[in-house]
View 1 (spheres, one colour):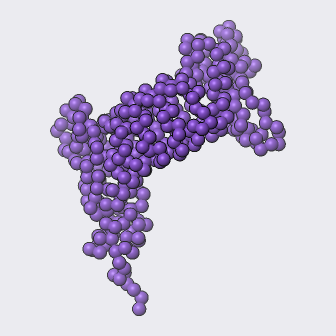
View 2: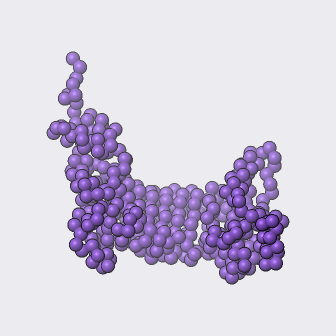
View 3: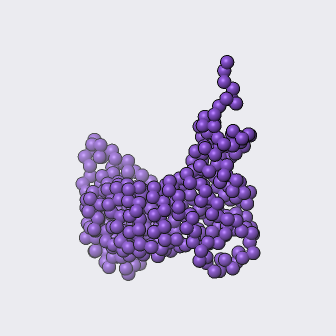
Length: 377
């Protein structure tokens, strides 16, 4: 005789439920055995988002029905509703929402298998306000995103997330960058934007073996990009630094003639890190000239160069010729194919801009206006 569905044990049912999303599992809980199986189920990492009071009530039920939820997103509730204020909330926000119906955010601390937690606000209504220690005590969490909220927290609190791989946040953060060292062996991505009081030296993370993306534009971190040696940031692919770091994007040049020497300080780094993207880097004159041109890198395959081009807000958008720092790869070589493909992509992106042929640095004011007249004609 063939076994029936009723003969399946809770462990087998839990494995079957593991192929379903959280809502499907909740609907499948038809009897006691299925409810017990659901409690054992490691819910697959399918996003479940709290974006209404109904979602919140469902989440409250899931804390006991599906305690092994792995992925959760928290957003704005509904008009007149909010999550409970945390410790030391922003007074203005607490006063503004004093009459709102309040919902306990600490219920999510029951999800001990959580791998991804996203708290994001896309409306002018912050879902959380204050300090919430319970949000930083998930031993298996790998991804944490906190954006657009009035959450106050310190980098030291990440000690409660020992397996964290990705961190994305904006304002409200304090602490020293060195506090991230507890995540040295796991951290792959850290981006901190907005206005923060995060200090320290970006080189404190230089020996992180798996760090691929580092974005610190919203911090007051210091340092010198020339300190990066051949043994530092071995996996880094993207680097964005605040203005307090020497050589960061927006670095000020005193004169146009300073560009070649400054660019050459970057060359050893770029040679050692061919995968490092500096596409959003630019240098800016401390006393901008009439053309308001910025210094930018150009990298086409293995070939590196730089050029001057007008800033994003400076019409008309113009560019000078590229000052190549490497010889052109030999035709027919694999490097030539990479170079040609990358150069075509670069030219596609700047299509429609005005090229000042023959000029490798910004022209004089007289030359500039003459060239603009000729280009218009």
